[in-house]
Length: 631
Ligand SMILES: Nc1nc2c(ncn2[C@@H]2O[C@H](COP(=O)(O)OP(=O)(O)OP(=O)(O)O)[C@@H](O)[C@H]2O)c(=O)[nH]1
Ligand SMILES: [Mg+2]
Image: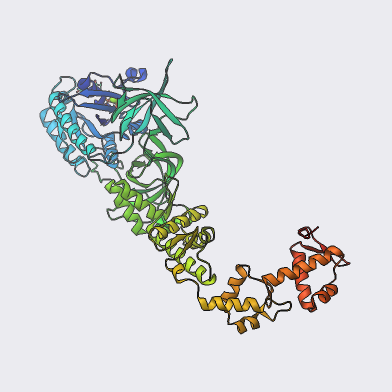
């Protein structure tokens, strides 16, 4: 691997010249840059160190109007080479670039106090003191300041040593970071005749190999790496550092500056980010114009430019309502609504700046690249956000995953399954157990509840907790039911779900006997009123419901019921008569020896079910009438 160092500093302070003196490479590759003697777009160079390490340099322009290109370069560096001309001292873009480095979280740098051939010793000492004061409130406080002249070569060996030490420190820090999939933020794209598309960038995370398929974010596509080049030579595998990749991709694939090619599932396309915005370091004004300092926190509604790796877009800051929260370290919570989607993952550092009047910059850390929407936002409280911020600061992916799940309530995982936050899972399990118990009470004699009946009974309360989008509720209910089964709080038995011990206890024998008595009492042609019969049989309402649900009795009106066997016989009689000719209620009443009340109820029921059909002359066999036996 190699560490990537970015230059920074005011225009004409000698960044590109110093890199050329160090590496022999002119990073100003564009004809216009050479003609005008200034850097316009990012350029690249590399330095082989005595210890075998290699430093990749990204050279940036110092011109104040080219700050966007400076940020493309600064967006993917590990540490900085801050260049300040001894004759001129720190100037406007010295401060602006310093504020940007601080906001991007860059905490390793070497300061080259260059053009020492143009300043006397007294001047050099004075500028050193100014620089120390300038760095003091930033993450770069205490960085070594090396006097150097690109013209005479004075100080170059010392600068090389300081850079080697910085590279070693930076490598150590990177080695301690959690391992993630490869991630390449594209900074250049160009076509090579006969070869197709080439993209370049600073590779982070794990290695990349020829032939691999990478996701393009944002965008729908994926690209295959045909060939990899590291510092001009073709390699099978590239480690962290500068790489160029010849990629096989559709001609019109929207890939370019701002695109990310990655293996890392945490990287998603998003136009809405939950972030923690840090207040900038308070820089002294020094020799610069006032107003060019990193500033206070951007207010709610502020419209800013957002820079993330090599991407840039407009962003509106939302800091009201639920998002109005100061975190423990003084950072402000905010939701950023972007003009266009960018690639983002939890923990990414982004930069916010005010374009006009140019000035304040603030750094921010992405807490959630796809924060909850709609009703799920109700879960976003200070405790959950604080826990997520702490997890993101730790860099621990599983802690970030757990805190994010708790913030959302439920999430669809990469495996396609709905995952539930612990409190929702517990609520779902309780709902499932309560639903099974209620079913046991209402259906004595049945061993358990069919899963299809249970699912909506659990999904409903989960949805009512107001944290789940509709379709996820059913999947979440399944998850809660599975969890209750896994904890043996419910049991799966012959395709049904019951509470443990329920089947062992069995239905109440006294109730079963009462149900038998009631069924017998209703097994007559003209049964008594249902409530009176039930009272006489000692059968409670759940016994009546169980008889009806299991098809042992037929209830046609609140007080009118027959045993199923008797009812089948009465219905068959009506059908036989209807086949013989139009059946009138009076004829049916006489044939069965009952009263008008009973025959009207039966005939209506048979009409409703299509077994009979009513005509003016009487009832005839209906569309659903079964054929008569024997015909
Ligand atoms: N005397 C002297 N001149 C230098 C030194 N380093 C750079 N210069 C001159 O300063 C001018 C600007 O140098 P560059 O390297 O283009 O400056 P830069 O910081 O890259 O400028 P931008 O890319 O436009 O921001 C050139 O004319 C260089 O020759 C030095 O150490 N001593
Ligand atoms: Mg330059």
